[in-house]
Figure 1 (cartoon, rainbow, N blue to C red):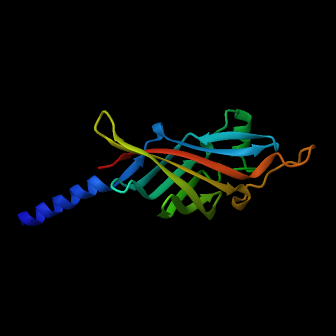
Figure 2: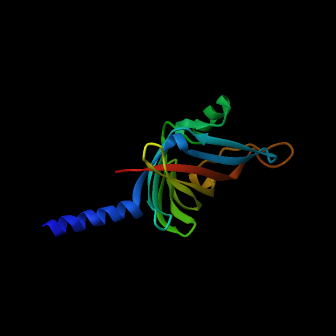
Figure 3: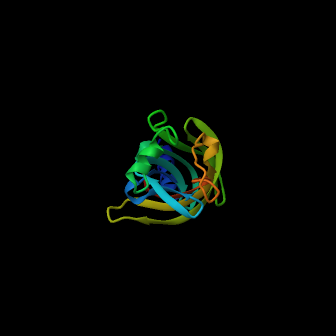
Length: 188
């Protein structure tokens, strides 16, 4: 019985040393995007309310899986009128679809494959992954950080609103760049 307990403790210790489940630390993370506007500049924005978990292998310094939830109504582009427009049915339809979700299906090297669900539409996406670092904070918490970047076509998710501009082209581009910085805390 003592041998079984010792073996169990040993396996648990090595799991804690080499891999673990992390909770996204929203205070040290950001979920942002960038989209071309009027064919001349980019508008940046972010979501201020999000949550998630991920599995990270400390030994190989590799992300294993990630699940995330974004509160659609928390969109912020530093322009209240534009944010209200983005929350309505022309764009995110935040009342009807209060969440955007991402669930990874596999991680291969520096690519995270997963399913992004927005406005009730689920589509596969591939995000580039870059490990940022690992450290213990002043309170003894194990922290990990990384960046995810990718691109989606908003039309794929039913976000079709647009206007033609006099000089030619459209007000809002179809391609949206995703820029995500995540920090996480190892959970017990």
